[in-house]
Figure 1: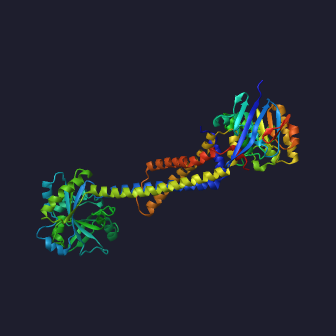
Figure 2: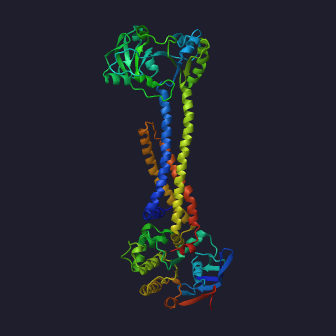
Length: 225
Length: 408
Protein backbone atom coordinates (compact mmCIF):
# COMPACT_ATOMS: atom_id res chain seq x y z
CA UNK A 1 0.00 0.00 0.00
CA UNK A 2 1.39 3.40 -0.96
CA UNK A 3 1.74 5.99 1.74
CA UNK A 4 -0.84 8.79 1.84
CA UNK A 5 2.01 11.29 1.77
CA UNK A 6 5.57 10.58 0.70
CA UNK A 7 8.27 13.26 0.70
CA UNK A 8 11.72 12.46 -0.61
CA UNK A 9 14.68 14.83 -0.37
CA UNK A 10 12.58 17.98 -0.08
CA UNK A 11 14.62 21.18 0.04
CA UNK A 12 13.45 24.77 0.22
CA UNK A 13 15.63 27.80 -0.19
CA UNK A 14 14.42 31.37 0.18
CA UNK A 15 16.07 34.23 -1.55
CA UNK A 16 16.65 37.19 0.70
CA UNK A 17 18.27 39.92 -1.35
CA UNK A 18 21.46 38.44 -2.76
CA UNK A 19 21.62 35.65 -0.17
CA UNK A 20 20.06 32.25 -0.47
CA UNK A 21 18.71 31.10 2.85
CA UNK A 22 18.22 27.33 3.07
CA UNK A 23 15.23 26.39 5.21
CA UNK A 24 14.77 22.71 4.44
CA UNK A 25 17.78 20.55 3.60
CA UNK A 26 16.41 17.26 2.36
CA UNK A 27 13.37 16.07 4.23
CA UNK A 28 12.20 12.47 3.82
CA UNK A 29 8.85 11.71 5.35
CA UNK A 30 6.03 9.19 4.95
CA UNK A 31 2.62 9.60 6.50
CA UNK A 32 -0.10 6.94 6.37
CA UNK A 33 -3.79 7.55 5.92
CA UNK A 34 -5.49 8.30 9.21
CA UNK A 35 -2.23 8.90 11.04
CA UNK A 36 -1.75 11.80 13.44
CA UNK A 37 1.66 13.42 13.20
CA UNK A 38 2.99 16.22 15.37
CA UNK A 39 5.83 18.28 13.96
CA UNK A 40 8.00 19.95 16.57
CA UNK A 41 11.00 22.16 16.41
CA UNK A 42 12.40 25.47 17.52
CA UNK A 43 11.19 28.58 15.77
CA UNK A 44 13.02 29.01 12.49
CA UNK A 45 13.63 25.30 12.23
CA UNK A 46 11.52 25.09 9.09
CA UNK A 47 8.48 23.33 10.52
CA UNK A 48 5.98 25.84 9.17
CA UNK A 49 7.65 25.78 5.77
CA UNK A 50 7.35 22.00 5.78
CA UNK A 51 3.65 22.30 6.62
CA UNK A 52 3.11 24.79 3.78
CA UNK A 53 4.83 22.44 1.33
CA UNK A 54 2.75 19.52 2.61
CA UNK A 55 -0.38 21.63 2.06
CA UNK A 56 0.66 22.58 -1.50
CA UNK A 57 0.71 26.26 -0.51
CA UNK A 58 4.40 26.46 -1.22
CA UNK A 59 6.50 24.68 -3.80
CA UNK A 60 9.67 22.82 -2.80
CA UNK A 61 12.93 23.97 -4.41
CA UNK A 62 13.75 20.35 -5.12
CA UNK A 63 12.69 16.90 -4.09
CA UNK A 64 9.67 14.73 -4.69
CA UNK A 65 6.17 14.86 -3.21
CA UNK A 66 3.76 12.01 -3.89
CA UNK A 67 0.21 12.48 -2.65
CA UNK A 68 -1.55 9.12 -2.89
CA UNK A 69 1.11 8.15 -5.41
CA UNK A 70 0.55 11.25 -7.57
CA UNK A 71 3.42 13.70 -8.04
CA UNK A 72 2.24 17.11 -6.82
CA UNK A 73 5.63 18.78 -6.36
CA UNK A 74 5.40 20.98 -9.42
CA UNK A 75 1.84 21.21 -10.65
CA UNK A 76 0.39 24.28 -12.38
CA UNK A 77 -1.43 26.75 -10.14
CA UNK A 78 -4.94 25.66 -11.11
CA UNK A 79 -4.23 22.04 -10.23
CA UNK A 80 -2.51 22.87 -6.95
CA UNK A 81 -5.47 25.03 -5.98
CA UNK A 82 -7.77 22.12 -6.69
CA UNK A 83 -5.62 19.80 -4.56
CA UNK A 84 -5.70 22.30 -1.66
CA UNK A 85 -9.42 22.68 -2.05
CA UNK A 86 -10.30 18.96 -2.09
CA UNK A 87 -7.61 17.25 -0.05
CA UNK A 88 -6.50 19.66 2.65
CA UNK A 89 -8.07 21.61 5.42
CA UNK A 90 -6.01 24.35 7.05
CA UNK A 91 -6.20 25.55 10.65
CA UNK A 92 -4.07 28.55 11.56
CA UNK A 93 -2.85 30.01 14.80
CA UNK A 94 -4.38 33.37 13.87
CA UNK A 95 -7.72 31.79 12.79
CA UNK A 96 -7.94 33.89 9.60
CA UNK A 97 -11.69 34.31 9.65
CA UNK A 98 -13.08 37.00 7.32
CA UNK A 99 -14.56 39.66 9.51
CA UNK A 100 -17.07 40.97 6.98
CA UNK A 101 -18.93 37.66 6.92
CA UNK A 102 -21.03 35.72 9.37
CA UNK A 103 -19.51 32.55 10.72
CA UNK A 104 -21.68 30.33 8.56
CA UNK A 105 -20.46 32.23 5.49
CA UNK A 106 -16.91 31.72 6.69
CA UNK A 107 -17.45 27.99 6.90
CA UNK A 108 -18.88 27.98 3.37
CA UNK A 109 -15.77 29.58 1.94
CA UNK A 110 -13.90 26.45 0.72
CA UNK A 111 -17.08 25.18 -0.91
CA UNK A 112 -17.32 28.34 -3.01
CA UNK A 113 -14.30 27.07 -4.88
CA UNK A 114 -15.68 23.59 -5.46
CA UNK A 115 -18.84 22.58 -7.26
CA UNK A 116 -21.25 22.64 -4.36
CA UNK A 117 -24.65 24.23 -4.84
CA UNK A 118 -25.47 27.17 -2.57
CA UNK A 119 -28.17 25.19 -0.85
CA UNK A 120 -25.84 22.30 -0.10
CA UNK A 121 -23.15 24.75 1.06
CA UNK A 122 -25.45 26.20 3.66
CA UNK A 123 -26.66 22.77 4.75
CA UNK A 124 -23.14 21.42 5.12
CA UNK A 125 -21.90 24.54 6.91
CA UNK A 126 -24.70 24.37 9.48
CA UNK A 127 -24.00 20.69 10.02
CA UNK A 128 -20.32 21.44 10.67
CA UNK A 129 -21.06 24.29 13.04
CA UNK A 130 -23.31 21.90 14.93
CA UNK A 131 -20.44 19.43 15.04
CA UNK A 132 -18.04 21.97 16.58
CA UNK A 133 -20.68 23.09 19.03
CA UNK A 134 -21.57 26.48 17.55
CA UNK A 135 -24.92 25.58 16.02
CA UNK A 136 -26.60 28.33 18.01
CA UNK A 137 -24.41 31.21 16.78
CA UNK A 138 -24.37 30.74 13.02
CA UNK A 139 -25.23 34.30 12.08
CA UNK A 140 -22.80 36.00 14.44
CA UNK A 141 -19.73 37.83 13.22
CA UNK A 142 -16.28 36.46 14.12
CA UNK A 143 -15.64 39.59 16.20
CA UNK A 144 -18.47 38.56 18.52
CA UNK A 145 -16.82 35.25 19.39
CA UNK A 146 -14.11 34.29 21.87
CA UNK A 147 -10.76 32.98 20.64
CA UNK A 148 -11.69 29.37 21.32
CA UNK A 149 -14.97 29.77 19.46
CA UNK A 150 -13.19 31.38 16.52
CA UNK A 151 -10.86 28.43 16.29
CA UNK A 152 -13.86 26.10 16.27
CA UNK A 153 -15.27 28.02 13.31
CA UNK A 154 -11.89 27.70 11.60
CA UNK A 155 -11.91 23.97 12.20
CA UNK A 156 -15.43 23.68 10.80
CA UNK A 157 -14.23 25.62 7.74
CA UNK A 158 -11.24 23.31 7.34
CA UNK A 159 -13.57 20.30 7.26
CA UNK A 160 -16.00 21.81 4.73
CA UNK A 161 -14.89 19.85 1.68
CA UNK A 162 -14.33 16.60 3.64
CA UNK A 163 -10.57 16.76 3.31
CA UNK A 164 -8.53 13.64 3.93
CA UNK A 165 -5.79 15.67 5.62
CA UNK A 166 -6.11 18.38 8.26
CA UNK A 167 -3.10 20.70 8.58
CA UNK A 168 -2.84 22.75 11.74
CA UNK A 169 -0.18 25.35 12.45
CA UNK A 170 -0.06 26.01 16.22
CA UNK A 171 -3.84 25.60 16.49
CA UNK A 172 -3.82 26.37 20.20
CA UNK A 173 -1.05 28.96 20.13
CA UNK A 174 -3.32 31.96 20.60
CA UNK A 175 -5.67 30.45 23.17
CA UNK A 176 -5.91 30.35 26.95
CA UNK A 177 -5.52 27.04 28.76
CA UNK A 178 -9.19 26.19 28.99
CA UNK A 179 -9.81 26.89 25.32
CA UNK A 180 -6.68 24.91 24.47
CA UNK A 181 -8.07 21.84 26.19
CA UNK A 182 -11.39 22.21 24.43
CA UNK A 183 -9.76 22.51 21.00
CA UNK A 184 -7.56 19.47 21.63
CA UNK A 185 -10.63 17.52 22.63
CA UNK A 186 -12.46 18.64 19.53
CA UNK A 187 -9.59 17.58 17.26
CA UNK A 188 -9.32 14.22 19.01
CA UNK A 189 -13.04 13.70 18.61
CA UNK A 190 -12.89 14.64 14.91
CA UNK A 191 -10.11 12.15 14.34
CA UNK A 192 -12.03 9.47 16.11
CA UNK A 193 -15.23 10.02 14.16
CA UNK A 194 -13.90 11.02 10.71
CA UNK A 195 -10.53 9.29 10.62
CA UNK A 196 -8.95 12.38 9.12
CA UNK A 197 -5.17 12.39 8.77
CA UNK A 198 -3.81 15.19 10.96
CA UNK A 199 -0.51 17.00 10.75
CA UNK A 200 -0.01 19.45 13.57
CA UNK A 201 2.85 21.91 13.93
CA UNK A 202 3.43 22.85 17.55
CA UNK A 203 6.12 23.83 19.95
CA UNK A 204 4.08 22.63 22.90
CA UNK A 205 5.07 19.06 23.98
CA UNK A 206 1.70 18.62 25.64
CA UNK A 207 -0.12 19.21 22.37
CA UNK A 208 2.26 16.86 20.57
CA UNK A 209 1.68 14.16 23.15
CA UNK A 210 -2.08 14.58 23.20
CA UNK A 211 -2.59 14.71 19.42
CA UNK A 212 0.36 12.93 17.88
CA UNK A 213 0.48 9.21 17.23
CA UNK A 214 3.99 10.08 16.18
CA UNK A 215 6.18 13.12 16.72
CA UNK A 216 8.70 14.39 14.21
CA UNK A 217 11.39 16.79 15.30
CA UNK A 218 12.83 19.24 12.84
CA UNK A 219 16.11 20.99 13.35
CA UNK A 220 18.32 22.78 10.86
CA UNK A 221 15.95 21.87 8.06
CA UNK A 222 16.14 18.13 8.58
CA UNK A 223 14.06 15.51 10.31
CA UNK A 224 15.85 14.35 13.45
CA UNK A 225 16.09 10.64 13.78
CA UNK B 1 -15.66 31.44 -14.91
CA UNK B 2 -17.95 33.99 -13.26
CA UNK B 3 -20.27 32.71 -10.59
CA UNK B 4 -22.96 34.19 -8.44
CA UNK B 5 -20.64 33.89 -5.47
CA UNK B 6 -18.32 36.46 -7.06
CA UNK B 7 -21.08 39.03 -6.83
CA UNK B 8 -21.92 38.04 -3.31
CA UNK B 9 -18.31 38.47 -2.28
CA UNK B 10 -18.23 41.93 -3.85
CA UNK B 11 -21.37 42.91 -1.98
CA UNK B 12 -19.81 41.79 1.30
CA UNK B 13 -16.83 43.94 0.50
CA UNK B 14 -18.96 46.99 -0.32
CA UNK B 15 -21.00 46.48 2.83
CA UNK B 16 -17.93 46.40 5.03
CA UNK B 17 -16.28 49.42 3.37
CA UNK B 18 -19.10 51.77 2.49
CA UNK B 19 -17.03 54.97 2.53
CA UNK B 20 -14.30 53.57 0.36
CA UNK B 21 -16.82 52.16 -2.09
CA UNK B 22 -18.72 55.45 -2.15
CA UNK B 23 -15.56 57.39 -2.99
CA UNK B 24 -14.69 55.08 -5.84
CA UNK B 25 -18.27 55.33 -7.06
CA UNK B 26 -18.18 59.11 -6.86
CA UNK B 27 -15.19 59.24 -9.19
CA UNK B 28 -17.00 57.14 -11.74
CA UNK B 29 -20.26 59.05 -11.32
CA UNK B 30 -18.49 62.33 -12.06
CA UNK B 31 -16.57 60.86 -14.98
CA UNK B 32 -19.57 59.31 -16.66
CA UNK B 33 -21.89 62.22 -15.96
CA UNK B 34 -19.43 64.60 -17.57
CA UNK B 35 -19.35 62.37 -20.66
CA UNK B 36 -23.14 62.30 -20.81
CA UNK B 37 -23.38 66.02 -20.11
CA UNK B 38 -20.83 66.99 -22.73
CA UNK B 39 -22.36 64.77 -25.37
CA UNK B 40 -25.90 66.03 -24.71
CA UNK B 41 -24.79 69.64 -24.79
CA UNK B 42 -22.77 69.08 -27.96
CA UNK B 43 -25.62 67.23 -29.60
CA UNK B 44 -28.03 69.98 -28.52
CA UNK B 45 -25.83 72.66 -30.07
CA UNK B 46 -25.80 70.68 -33.30
CA UNK B 47 -29.58 70.55 -33.36
CA UNK B 48 -29.83 74.23 -32.48
CA UNK B 49 -27.73 75.09 -35.52
CA UNK B 50 -30.01 73.11 -37.78
CA UNK B 51 -33.08 74.67 -36.17
CA UNK B 52 -31.72 78.19 -36.59
CA UNK B 53 -30.97 77.52 -40.25
CA UNK B 54 -34.44 76.17 -40.79
CA UNK B 55 -36.01 79.17 -39.06
CA UNK B 56 -35.39 81.17 -42.22
CA UNK B 57 -35.96 78.30 -44.60
CA UNK B 58 -33.26 75.77 -45.32
CA UNK B 59 -33.93 75.68 -49.04
CA UNK B 60 -33.79 79.43 -49.59
CA UNK B 61 -30.99 81.67 -50.85
CA UNK B 62 -31.14 85.19 -49.47
CA UNK B 63 -29.59 88.23 -51.06
CA UNK B 64 -29.20 90.99 -48.54
CA UNK B 65 -28.25 94.56 -49.32
CA UNK B 66 -25.06 95.67 -47.66
CA UNK B 67 -25.14 98.79 -45.60
CA UNK B 68 -23.17 101.29 -47.54
CA UNK B 69 -21.81 104.35 -45.69
CA UNK B 70 -23.16 107.64 -47.06
CA UNK B 71 -19.83 108.89 -48.35
CA UNK B 72 -19.40 105.70 -50.42
CA UNK B 73 -22.86 106.05 -51.93
CA UNK B 74 -21.94 109.16 -53.92
CA UNK B 75 -19.04 107.17 -55.28
CA UNK B 76 -21.02 104.17 -56.51
CA UNK B 77 -24.43 105.61 -57.16
CA UNK B 78 -23.71 106.10 -60.86
CA UNK B 79 -22.73 102.44 -61.31
CA UNK B 80 -25.28 100.63 -59.18
CA UNK B 81 -28.88 101.17 -58.32
CA UNK B 82 -28.64 98.86 -55.34
CA UNK B 83 -30.84 95.85 -54.83
CA UNK B 84 -34.06 96.23 -56.82
CA UNK B 85 -36.95 94.34 -58.27
CA UNK B 86 -35.42 94.15 -61.73
CA UNK B 87 -32.62 92.03 -60.25
CA UNK B 88 -35.17 89.30 -59.54
CA UNK B 89 -36.30 89.05 -63.14
CA UNK B 90 -32.74 89.23 -64.44
CA UNK B 91 -31.52 86.51 -62.08
CA UNK B 92 -34.46 84.23 -62.79
CA UNK B 93 -33.71 84.57 -66.50
CA UNK B 94 -30.01 83.73 -66.17
CA UNK B 95 -29.48 81.48 -63.14
CA UNK B 96 -30.96 77.99 -63.43
CA UNK B 97 -32.70 76.41 -60.45
CA UNK B 98 -34.13 79.54 -58.86
CA UNK B 99 -37.76 79.01 -57.89
CA UNK B 100 -40.28 81.22 -56.16
CA UNK B 101 -39.03 84.59 -55.02
CA UNK B 102 -39.98 87.28 -52.59
CA UNK B 103 -38.55 90.59 -51.49
CA UNK B 104 -38.78 93.15 -48.72
CA UNK B 105 -37.56 96.49 -47.64
CA UNK B 106 -36.78 97.41 -44.07
CA UNK B 107 -37.28 100.90 -42.71
CA UNK B 108 -36.90 102.11 -39.17
CA UNK B 109 -40.24 103.07 -37.75
CA UNK B 110 -40.61 106.82 -37.70
CA UNK B 111 -43.76 108.63 -36.75
CA UNK B 112 -46.41 106.35 -35.28
CA UNK B 113 -49.07 106.23 -32.62
CA UNK B 114 -48.14 102.91 -31.14
CA UNK B 115 -49.21 102.97 -27.50
CA UNK B 116 -45.73 102.06 -26.29
CA UNK B 117 -42.23 103.36 -26.54
CA UNK B 118 -40.85 102.15 -29.83
CA UNK B 119 -37.33 100.99 -29.81
CA UNK B 120 -35.62 99.39 -32.74
CA UNK B 121 -38.90 98.65 -34.48
CA UNK B 122 -38.72 98.02 -38.21
CA UNK B 123 -41.33 98.51 -40.86
CA UNK B 124 -41.00 95.59 -43.20
CA UNK B 125 -42.46 96.40 -46.60
CA UNK B 126 -43.01 92.90 -47.83
CA UNK B 127 -44.09 91.11 -50.92
CA UNK B 128 -46.68 88.69 -49.40
CA UNK B 129 -44.87 85.47 -50.33
CA UNK B 130 -42.35 86.53 -47.66
CA UNK B 131 -44.58 84.84 -45.08
CA UNK B 132 -44.23 81.52 -46.77
CA UNK B 133 -40.60 81.73 -47.85
CA UNK B 134 -39.24 83.18 -44.58
CA UNK B 135 -41.46 80.83 -42.61
CA UNK B 136 -43.39 83.48 -40.75
CA UNK B 137 -46.20 81.82 -38.86
CA UNK B 138 -49.33 83.75 -38.01
CA UNK B 139 -50.89 82.95 -34.61
CA UNK B 140 -53.77 85.43 -34.74
CA UNK B 141 -55.64 86.73 -37.75
CA UNK B 142 -54.11 86.21 -41.17
CA UNK B 143 -50.97 86.74 -43.17
CA UNK B 144 -50.67 89.37 -45.88
CA UNK B 145 -52.10 88.27 -49.23
CA UNK B 146 -51.52 89.06 -52.86
CA UNK B 147 -54.79 91.03 -52.91
CA UNK B 148 -53.49 93.32 -50.14
CA UNK B 149 -50.50 93.97 -52.32
CA UNK B 150 -52.54 94.44 -55.48
CA UNK B 151 -55.02 96.89 -53.98
CA UNK B 152 -52.50 98.57 -51.73
CA UNK B 153 -54.64 97.84 -48.69
CA UNK B 154 -53.66 99.57 -45.52
CA UNK B 155 -53.24 96.46 -43.43
CA UNK B 156 -50.35 95.27 -41.24
CA UNK B 157 -49.19 92.15 -39.45
CA UNK B 158 -47.36 92.72 -36.16
CA UNK B 159 -44.39 90.85 -34.80
CA UNK B 160 -45.02 88.88 -31.62
CA UNK B 161 -43.02 91.03 -29.23
CA UNK B 162 -44.45 94.27 -30.57
CA UNK B 163 -48.02 92.96 -30.41
CA UNK B 164 -47.54 91.79 -26.86
CA UNK B 165 -45.93 95.01 -25.68
CA UNK B 166 -48.18 97.46 -27.45
CA UNK B 167 -51.53 95.74 -27.22
CA UNK B 168 -51.06 92.98 -24.64
CA UNK B 169 -52.17 90.34 -27.10
CA UNK B 170 -55.30 92.20 -28.32
CA UNK B 171 -53.83 93.70 -31.43
CA UNK B 172 -56.29 92.32 -34.00
CA UNK B 173 -58.52 94.99 -35.53
CA UNK B 174 -56.61 97.87 -33.90
CA UNK B 175 -55.75 100.86 -36.07
CA UNK B 176 -52.27 102.28 -35.96
CA UNK B 177 -50.78 105.30 -37.60
CA UNK B 178 -47.55 104.92 -39.51
CA UNK B 179 -46.33 108.17 -41.01
CA UNK B 180 -49.49 109.95 -42.17
CA UNK B 181 -51.72 106.95 -42.85
CA UNK B 182 -53.76 104.62 -40.69
CA UNK B 183 -53.45 100.85 -40.95
CA UNK B 184 -55.52 98.01 -39.61
CA UNK B 185 -53.85 95.14 -37.77
CA UNK B 186 -54.97 91.93 -39.47
CA UNK B 187 -52.53 89.43 -38.00
CA UNK B 188 -49.92 88.70 -35.36
CA UNK B 189 -46.81 86.58 -35.93
CA UNK B 190 -45.59 83.71 -33.83
CA UNK B 191 -42.34 84.43 -32.00
CA UNK B 192 -39.22 83.71 -34.02
CA UNK B 193 -36.19 82.29 -32.28
CA UNK B 194 -32.93 84.10 -32.72
CA UNK B 195 -30.61 82.62 -35.29
CA UNK B 196 -27.62 83.66 -33.19
CA UNK B 197 -25.05 85.28 -35.44
CA UNK B 198 -26.86 84.61 -38.69
CA UNK B 199 -26.37 87.50 -41.12
CA UNK B 200 -30.13 87.58 -41.50
CA UNK B 201 -31.47 87.28 -37.99
CA UNK B 202 -35.06 86.00 -37.94
CA UNK B 203 -35.49 87.69 -34.59
CA UNK B 204 -35.94 91.03 -36.33
CA UNK B 205 -39.48 89.96 -37.22
CA UNK B 206 -40.43 89.91 -33.54
CA UNK B 207 -40.24 93.70 -33.43
CA UNK B 208 -41.60 94.54 -36.82
CA UNK B 209 -44.63 95.88 -38.56
CA UNK B 210 -45.18 94.09 -41.83
CA UNK B 211 -46.91 96.14 -44.53
CA UNK B 212 -47.70 95.15 -48.15
CA UNK B 213 -44.84 96.41 -50.29
CA UNK B 214 -46.99 98.36 -52.70
CA UNK B 215 -48.90 100.03 -49.87
CA UNK B 216 -45.66 101.09 -48.23
CA UNK B 217 -44.41 102.70 -51.41
CA UNK B 218 -47.57 104.71 -51.60
CA UNK B 219 -48.09 105.62 -47.96
CA UNK B 220 -44.81 105.63 -46.09
CA UNK B 221 -41.94 107.92 -46.93
CA UNK B 222 -38.78 106.25 -48.13
CA UNK B 223 -35.83 107.09 -45.98
CA UNK B 224 -33.07 105.57 -48.08
CA UNK B 225 -32.92 106.74 -51.67
CA UNK B 226 -30.11 104.51 -52.76
CA UNK B 227 -31.52 101.00 -52.78
CA UNK B 228 -35.00 99.83 -53.45
CA UNK B 229 -34.88 96.53 -51.53
CA UNK B 230 -33.12 95.14 -48.49
CA UNK B 231 -33.64 91.49 -49.18
CA UNK B 232 -34.49 89.20 -52.05
CA UNK B 233 -35.06 85.51 -51.40
CA UNK B 234 -35.23 82.66 -53.88
CA UNK B 235 -36.42 79.21 -53.11
CA UNK B 236 -34.24 76.45 -54.57
CA UNK B 237 -34.75 72.71 -54.74
CA UNK B 238 -33.02 71.79 -51.49
CA UNK B 239 -30.50 72.88 -48.88
CA UNK B 240 -27.77 71.22 -50.94
CA UNK B 241 -28.58 73.55 -53.88
CA UNK B 242 -28.17 76.79 -51.94
CA UNK B 243 -24.40 77.02 -52.23
CA UNK B 244 -24.50 76.26 -55.96
CA UNK B 245 -27.12 78.98 -56.41
CA UNK B 246 -25.03 81.42 -54.38
CA UNK B 247 -22.01 80.85 -56.62
CA UNK B 248 -24.10 81.34 -59.74
CA UNK B 249 -25.87 84.47 -58.51
CA UNK B 250 -22.75 86.30 -57.34
CA UNK B 251 -21.13 87.23 -60.68
CA UNK B 252 -24.44 87.87 -62.44
CA UNK B 253 -25.60 90.28 -59.76
CA UNK B 254 -22.25 92.00 -59.59
CA UNK B 255 -22.41 92.62 -63.34
CA UNK B 256 -25.95 93.95 -62.99
CA UNK B 257 -24.70 96.33 -60.29
CA UNK B 258 -21.97 97.79 -62.45
CA UNK B 259 -19.21 95.81 -60.76
CA UNK B 260 -20.14 96.91 -57.24
CA UNK B 261 -20.62 94.27 -54.59
CA UNK B 262 -23.26 96.09 -52.59
CA UNK B 263 -24.96 92.89 -51.56
CA UNK B 264 -24.30 89.77 -49.58
CA UNK B 265 -25.57 86.31 -50.52
CA UNK B 266 -26.57 83.95 -47.75
CA UNK B 267 -26.55 80.22 -48.48
CA UNK B 268 -27.80 78.16 -45.52
CA UNK B 269 -25.67 75.23 -46.59
CA UNK B 270 -22.53 77.28 -46.22
CA UNK B 271 -23.50 78.63 -42.80
CA UNK B 272 -24.35 75.15 -41.69
CA UNK B 273 -20.98 73.82 -42.79
CA UNK B 274 -19.10 76.63 -41.06
CA UNK B 275 -21.04 76.20 -37.86
CA UNK B 276 -20.64 72.48 -38.00
CA UNK B 277 -16.90 72.68 -38.29
CA UNK B 278 -16.58 75.10 -35.36
CA UNK B 279 -18.94 72.90 -33.41
CA UNK B 280 -16.86 69.84 -34.31
CA UNK B 281 -13.76 71.45 -32.80
CA UNK B 282 -15.73 72.37 -29.71
CA UNK B 283 -17.05 68.82 -29.48
CA UNK B 284 -13.53 67.40 -29.58
CA UNK B 285 -12.58 69.69 -26.70
CA UNK B 286 -15.70 68.79 -24.72
CA UNK B 287 -15.22 65.08 -25.25
CA UNK B 288 -11.52 65.27 -24.35
CA UNK B 289 -12.43 66.91 -21.06
CA UNK B 290 -15.02 64.21 -20.47
CA UNK B 291 -12.53 61.49 -21.35
CA UNK B 292 -9.98 62.94 -18.94
CA UNK B 293 -12.49 62.98 -16.12
CA UNK B 294 -13.41 59.40 -16.94
CA UNK B 295 -9.74 58.44 -16.76
CA UNK B 296 -9.41 60.26 -13.45
CA UNK B 297 -12.41 58.28 -12.23
CA UNK B 298 -10.72 55.10 -13.40
CA UNK B 299 -7.51 55.99 -11.60
CA UNK B 300 -9.59 56.57 -8.47
CA UNK B 301 -11.02 53.08 -8.81
CA UNK B 302 -7.56 51.65 -9.36
CA UNK B 303 -6.21 53.47 -6.34
CA UNK B 304 -8.97 52.22 -4.11
CA UNK B 305 -8.64 48.68 -5.43
CA UNK B 306 -4.92 48.74 -4.64
CA UNK B 307 -5.59 49.98 -1.12
CA UNK B 308 -8.19 47.26 -0.84
CA UNK B 309 -5.73 44.58 -1.80
CA UNK B 310 -3.13 45.81 0.66
CA UNK B 311 -5.68 45.72 3.43
CA UNK B 312 -7.12 42.37 2.44
CA UNK B 313 -3.85 40.61 1.86
CA UNK B 314 -4.52 38.02 4.55
CA UNK B 315 -7.94 37.37 3.05
CA UNK B 316 -6.24 36.69 -0.27
CA UNK B 317 -3.85 34.29 1.48
CA UNK B 318 -6.72 32.51 3.15
CA UNK B 319 -8.75 32.20 -0.04
CA UNK B 320 -5.72 30.77 -1.79
CA UNK B 321 -5.26 28.29 1.07
CA UNK B 322 -8.84 27.05 0.89
CA UNK B 323 -8.55 26.47 -2.83
CA UNK B 324 -8.88 29.68 -4.84
CA UNK B 325 -6.65 29.67 -7.90
CA UNK B 326 -4.85 32.82 -9.08
CA UNK B 327 -7.47 33.15 -11.78
CA UNK B 328 -10.29 33.15 -9.25
CA UNK B 329 -8.60 35.80 -7.10
CA UNK B 330 -8.04 37.94 -10.18
CA UNK B 331 -11.66 37.55 -11.27
CA UNK B 332 -12.92 38.44 -7.83
CA UNK B 333 -11.11 41.79 -7.78
CA UNK B 334 -11.83 42.47 -11.41
CA UNK B 335 -15.54 41.93 -10.82
CA UNK B 336 -15.42 44.27 -7.85
CA UNK B 337 -14.02 47.11 -9.91
CA UNK B 338 -16.37 46.39 -12.81
CA UNK B 339 -19.34 46.49 -10.44
CA UNK B 340 -18.16 49.82 -9.01
CA UNK B 341 -17.76 51.21 -12.52
CA UNK B 342 -21.04 49.77 -13.72
CA UNK B 343 -23.05 51.16 -10.82
CA UNK B 344 -21.10 54.42 -10.94
CA UNK B 345 -21.80 54.53 -14.66
CA UNK B 346 -25.51 53.99 -14.19
CA UNK B 347 -25.76 56.72 -11.58
CA UNK B 348 -23.52 58.90 -13.74
CA UNK B 349 -25.81 58.56 -16.75
CA UNK B 350 -28.80 59.72 -14.72
CA UNK B 351 -26.76 62.45 -13.07
CA UNK B 352 -25.37 63.56 -16.44
CA UNK B 353 -28.85 63.90 -17.88
CA UNK B 354 -29.98 65.89 -14.88
CA UNK B 355 -26.95 68.16 -15.10
CA UNK B 356 -27.29 68.76 -18.81
CA UNK B 357 -30.98 69.44 -18.34
CA UNK B 358 -30.18 72.00 -15.63
CA UNK B 359 -27.43 73.57 -17.71
CA UNK B 360 -29.74 73.73 -20.71
CA UNK B 361 -32.46 75.30 -18.60
CA UNK B 362 -30.18 77.69 -16.73
CA UNK B 363 -28.26 78.94 -19.75
CA UNK B 364 -31.10 78.57 -22.24
CA UNK B 365 -29.17 76.08 -24.34
CA UNK B 366 -30.76 73.31 -26.25
CA UNK B 367 -29.67 69.90 -24.96
CA UNK B 368 -30.42 66.64 -26.68
CA UNK B 369 -30.64 63.39 -24.75
CA UNK B 370 -29.11 60.95 -27.15
CA UNK B 371 -29.59 57.31 -26.23
CA UNK B 372 -26.32 56.63 -28.03
CA UNK B 373 -24.61 58.75 -25.40
CA UNK B 374 -26.13 56.58 -22.72
CA UNK B 375 -25.05 53.31 -24.31
CA UNK B 376 -21.57 54.63 -25.03
CA UNK B 377 -21.07 55.96 -21.49
CA UNK B 378 -22.28 52.71 -20.02
CA UNK B 379 -19.93 50.74 -22.21
CA UNK B 380 -17.10 53.13 -21.39
CA UNK B 381 -17.61 52.78 -17.67
CA UNK B 382 -17.48 49.00 -17.87
CA UNK B 383 -14.37 49.29 -20.03
CA UNK B 384 -12.82 51.61 -17.44
CA UNK B 385 -13.60 49.00 -14.79
CA UNK B 386 -11.83 46.32 -16.77
CA UNK B 387 -8.86 48.46 -17.78
CA UNK B 388 -8.21 50.10 -14.42
CA UNK B 389 -9.25 47.02 -12.45
CA UNK B 390 -6.90 44.70 -14.30
CA UNK B 391 -3.64 45.74 -12.81
CA UNK B 392 -4.76 45.63 -9.17
CA UNK B 393 -6.53 42.32 -9.84
CA UNK B 394 -3.43 40.81 -11.40
CA UNK B 395 -1.35 42.03 -8.49
CA UNK B 396 -3.82 40.46 -6.08
CA UNK B 397 -3.61 37.16 -7.93
CA UNK B 398 0.18 37.14 -7.69
CA UNK B 399 0.29 37.57 -3.95
CA UNK B 400 2.29 34.76 -2.35
CA UNK B 401 -0.19 32.95 -0.08
CA UNK B 402 2.41 31.97 2.51
CA UNK B 403 3.54 35.56 2.98
CA UNK B 404 -0.03 36.82 2.84
CA UNK B 405 -1.06 34.53 5.69
CA UNK B 406 1.63 36.00 7.90
CA UNK B 407 -0.23 39.31 7.94
CA UNK B 408 -2.71 39.48 10.87
